[in-house]
Length: 79
Image 1 (cartoon, rainbow, N blue to C red):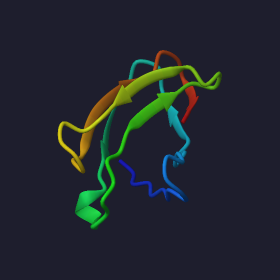
Image 2: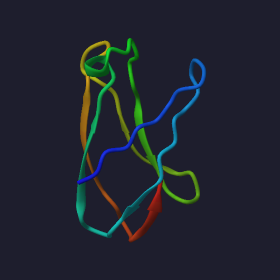
Image 3: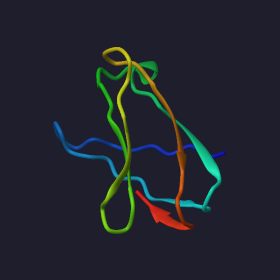
């Protein structure tokens, strides 16, 4: 397990956090903003090294958290 913190510099600007993943090993991802006192509706995207989107998730409610699972198709770096 690990925790990562990102900063959104301006509206609609992404906060990119690189991760390493093993092929076939699921990663549970939780993204929160409201619990930190931020009024922000997050969108979670996982991209491969060619910037191909492999996962996209949005909260069920405005300012809500995102809970998602990502299973890498191959071992390597993702963002």
